[in-house]
Length: 160
Image (tube, rainbow, N blue to C red; front, side, top):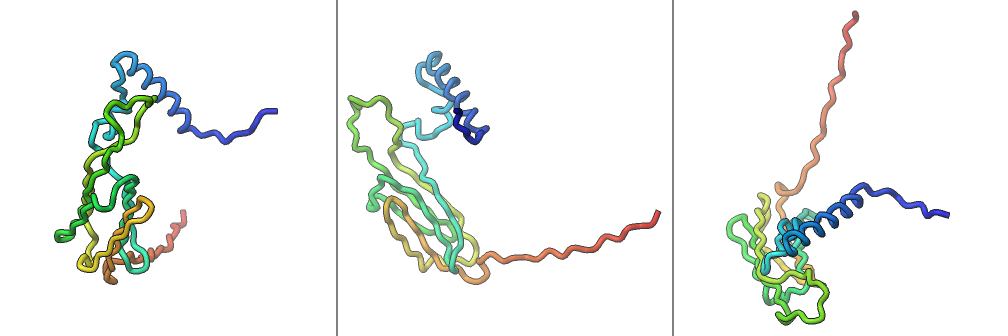
């Protein structure tokens, strides 16, 4: 019997991308279109993923920093701009003997975020746990999201 699987149309593109990468690797010697688009292909450039949200009257920023020593992270706030910068250092020798391939990115990074109005940047608190940096700032009532109700007007039909 055949196994039933849910069709994922985006998965079809991964095969095409793999084929195109192979074509470019053969023609251009490893300089793939993916390598051109992924900034981490250029040595020393990578950008950690960041989530920002409001919860319990707090503005919260999560930055994924796996492999980064918290001592190598600098957080600063100037006006309403939060800057997180740091460096993930490589512990791999330059020879890379025994590696089949190497995709991990290393080097300096910097993320700059504009803080919403009403966030009290003077009471910032930062913690680092399991590779995730969490930055907390209290938010005043005017910074919190507000729900706006939409009034719907009844349509009048004209007699024909």
